[in-house]
Length: 122
Image 1 (cartoon, rainbow, N blue to C red):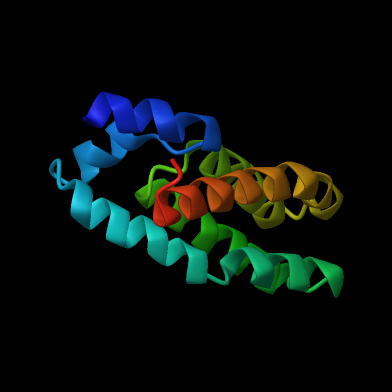
Image 2: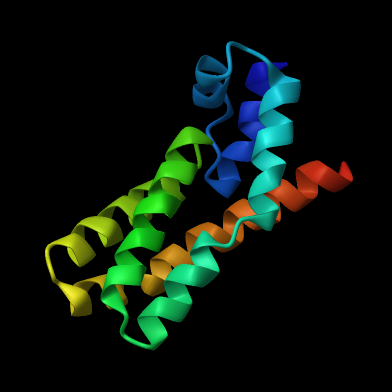
């Protein structure tokens, strides 16, 4: 079962096997927590903060997004959010802004995968 779910979720940047290690193999708990990401605002908070060049808020949102993505084993989203968080922390604002398309793509894929899982089309 876990291998099957991992194969289905991997194209969306979701590492189900890693999540099962974190969740003590409780697939129902993981699904419940993962689907809560659909209501998470850290991505939109980050985009909004970058639009107004509020880099302190952008860093806080990126750091929070990194934590959520890491805890939920959203591997690609975690990688990009971690890089963006580090760039913002270091004051490399232009570098962070250049990562936004990759962050957006990773976030969109996670959302797509979660919605497919939620509606049973996965």
